Image (cartoon, rainbow, N blue to C red; front, top):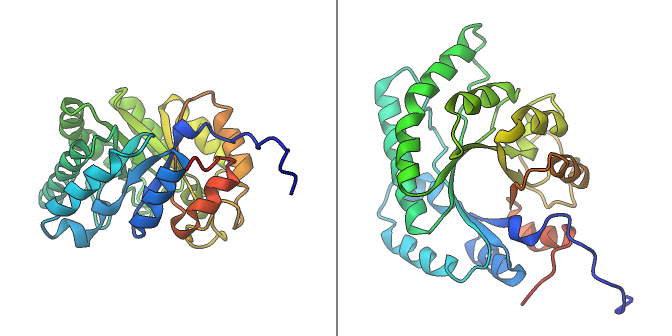
Length: 269
């Protein structure tokens, strides 16, 4: 190794990088601290946390994130959520879960709460895009109002979405600087035929956040950035070409330290 060689410049400025903290919180928080980046706390999105009193775990997490140098975000509930449902009882449950998530985000000092689109691509109805859109416009204003009161933004992430257009349509209709979109790179390549460039271009000015991990192409593997079938370097180049100062959260679990190295971000510890 040439110890005199200059360090490789980072693909993304470290102040726009976060580590997703999920099922390996000690490892993931340690990576965020060592590399001087932020954290997207996903721990409290899971049913096993939502169904019990998690106040002590939340208190401990709040103390941990205060030691981080970078931005903090929160991933909200997503399993079995269907906020665009036509059943008022279902939307009532979703509303309660999302409002609880806003309280968690506020406690952690998060700048954003990320939620899934829950767009149901299995419904092969000509009317479904309009049904989803209209139901979303009924649902989101209350959540957005509560988010604004807490100085928190709402980010909507593509999951099973096969097309970026419905989310672009929704963000445009909401027309709020607090209601933005998250592009999950792996989801976009697993569940759709559109390129990452097309997703970013369609989202346009509404793109604020990116989820990064790699995949072999069939399953949502959450591999490290240097593994898998997705050309992560090209994806970043295409997203950065938009000129938007988006943030990136690494959902790379046990591969997080290697993924930070792949990005050229130096260990500051």
